[in-house]
Image 1 (spheres, one colour):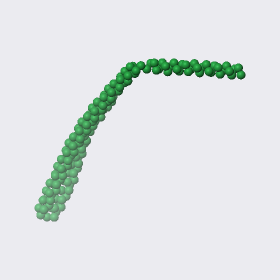
Image 2 (spheres, rainbow, N blue to C red):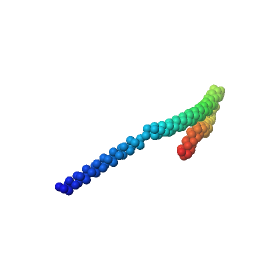
Image 3 (cartoon, one colour):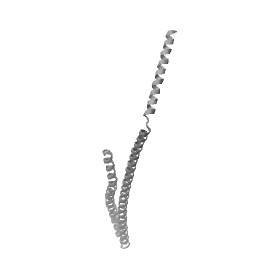
Image 4 (cartoon, one colour):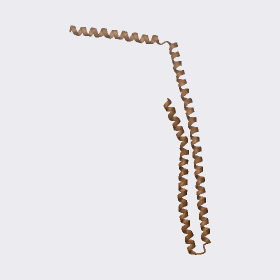
Length: 167
């Protein structure tokens, strides 16, 4: 029993020591909290946060302007490419229509059935050759157009990659 009493006495002494130490720590924390220092610290944190927010907002606005300019460039390029392809398509259609009308005039002026058959076979051969040539020309134009359209996008992506690598 005496051993049990000694253990309880030791535990009570330790608990009182811990209470006193905890009370001293709380008192030290309260005394260390100087209102002038705390408000100065809060002001410094607020100013730093404000500067960071302003910097982030300026960067965001700059990036948004860059994106707007990039999109404008892409749309202008797309319009120019589309206009060029449209004009070329109209020119090809006009060429084909003129050839068809010329052929029709020649057929109307044919004196014999054999002459009409010969005119028709020549027209079909020439039309096939013309279609192949027009397809080659149009393919070359679309390749150039695609490259023209991709150029501003590639420029923006390269700039973004360079900026990313710099950070």
